[in-house]
Image (cartoon, rainbow, N blue to C red):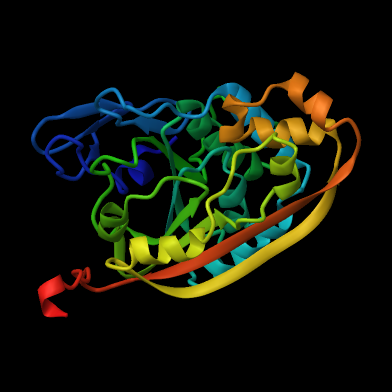
Length: 305
């Protein structure tokens, strides 16, 4: 692996100075803070104990099984199309998961540099390993193997709710698919006129599973709420609706439920009882493209009218 490509993304989480390769697998800042990367191609800069728990191996297994079956292929195509128009040189995926959506972007923009970030070390390891395998045709995906060549995607374990250990203005495009958002930090790490691509579920997404009591409710108007929440830092520029109905059996539903937050509330026995046969399920998403504002817009006070 090459620490050079990884270090170019990062700043010290303690003093915010740029990190640089310092021999071996060590990254160091000018103040002397040092951090050890690993041969899997990623670095952990969590710093302290996060109040949020990253996705487990079981959740990532379920996500991988469902996504690799192609059920969300239309969504990945929409995300890739939106990002590719930007012709980015650097793409940061915050909440990269298994790397499924990022892989679509890497195929469309093969010369760009990529950083996959997630709170889950397992997720980051899989994203990097998948990218390595994709860059070596016929090579199997093995999450813990060591390869001598630089990965197409570097990896970072970090908490989105903190000051990100990512350099200011380093990314051309920021990808955020079903993941938490930190608007101020997203604005900081994007270059001037940078682009933020966000995916949120529409309120009729998985309605059949919710009617069966298998999936959690989705608040209405998520896209509009997001536009308002990001409005001080970003201007909404594009909106693509992706929807369809697909016949899912119990095994597919188990993977779909198991890969998200509903996994904490729904067991396999409930799925078998409430979804005994193959039935149609609605998939519905909003893919939103935001342009970075030059200067964050301050909210108007009540006195100003």
